[in-house]
Length: 122
Image 1 (tube, rainbow, N blue to C red):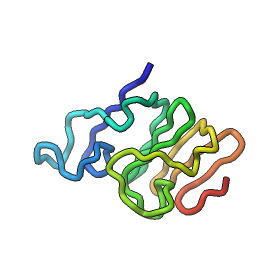
Image 2: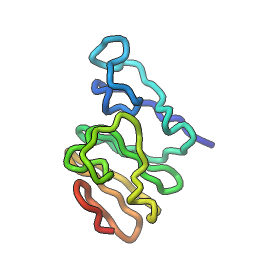
Image 3: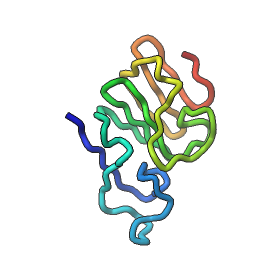
C-alpha cells in the first residue's frame, strides 16, 4: 500500500510540487496538493524545518526539498529544490528516523547519526 502525501503552505518553491509560481495568484496555497514525485513511495515520516522538508520512506530512503542553503538538503550543494530529491549520500544506510530544526537536518540509521548542513560523517 502506498500513502499519498499532501502539503500546503505559503512558499511554493518549498512545497515539493515542482513549481515556482503560487497557485491561483494567491500568496498562500490554501488547498492541499498531492506531491506527485512521491506517488510511488510509502512515506512513513515527514519533518519540516524553517525552509526545507525531509521525507523518510518505508525502505529507509530520504528525500528532501525546499531551501538548500548551507547544504540543508544533503545533496552537496546549496540549490533550492522545488521537488523531492533522493539524498543519494544516504543510500548505503537504512535510515530509521529523521528530524529537522530551524537550519539543520538529522538522519539516524540505528548506528550513526548525522546533522546537516555540510559534510556527512557516515
